[in-house]
Image 1 (cartoon, one colour):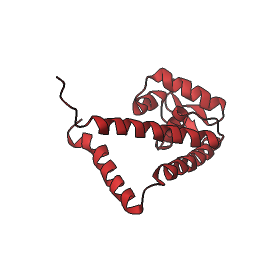
Image 2 (cartoon, rainbow, N blue to C red):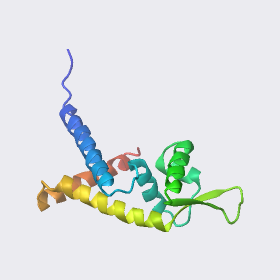
Image 3 (tube, rainbow, N blue to C red):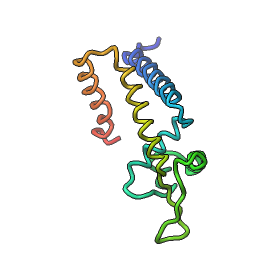
Length: 149
């Protein structure tokens, strides 16, 4: 005899919601017409958080992917003029990745697409429900850190 899983329906809801969020964000990303994949978008957003251009290994670590995956993403973004490889000024063996002006513009458009996706996702909620959801999400996001995970 199997024991009922009290969190089973909630886990299924979370999975369905996650898929919906990804689907809506992908749709809005395609609508902005930049020709950038969700993975490329994530790399651009991550790149923008660095104070100085990072190495590919730094990006791979931050994105939690293998370096080869970053190389593929950078190759595509470089071909589109969104990033460029630049030699490190202190070590000629090191290549750094920097945003181009086109990359900064793409980030602005991506931000607008993400905001539009969020607006669509949150549209059914009242202001009070949004506040509650925000608090719950903060708890879930911070929960792993509190337990040392």
